[in-house]
Length: 305
Image (cartoon, rainbow, N blue to C red; front, side, top):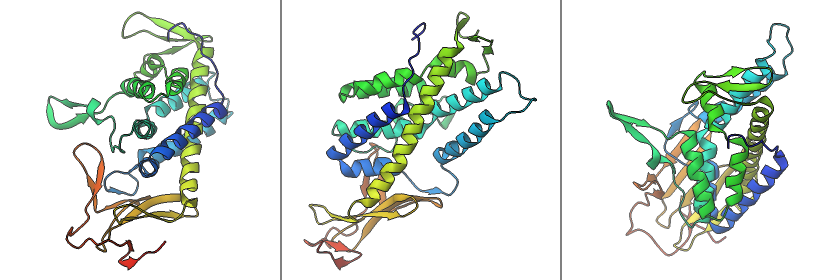
């Protein structure tokens, strides 16, 4: 993308596309989209969710961007804006949500770590795992989007993701002049106009602003759906929700009186009788198979629904 002038995209345009993407995935696989919105995984205590931390950080960064103080240099807003930009595009949760929406469209099940196969082990530490870079994840997202017939997502990614900006700022290899953003390491010295840097950053903020809003919106929309849903093999899906957050979890009730529950709240996550398969999908500990019956039960009581 070097040398290509950046094009400004409105948050409404990103938002419309992302909402349509959610709907297309939901129409194909509602339960997998529910898992995607909840970001189903293993057990997690309170205050261990980086996604929530970054959203709080953005509020702080915005305060500094709006701050007016004679002690701040003329470059302060650029530095804070670039810090926000790098934090935004490095966030794992949006990558994984988008990946799972594309999986739904391709007829695949929800995956706890859809980019897990792209990581690598540290040869010096057999117990370590190095996650894939943002560059790798966005490249693969683009490939999956094209496979799913969602080439527009690939084009949108190009409007806000530029790895040389991210790499230069993250490695403190940058110089901000009145008109240019420059970097010197990793090859020949290079530069791009600050107005293009601003456009990539503003596009990123617009894209992630739309993403945050839609993620919250879909939690609220899922909470408006019927609470209970009969499944063909005499299971009952129960959507767990509250007025403040919307959908925060689910229970799957089995015909032997047992149930599996996943929830994500401010107190952490609960994953009771949730099984993480070796292929990254989820399953349930049903209990005694001999005790299964041909009736729908909720908490052990017959459900007519």
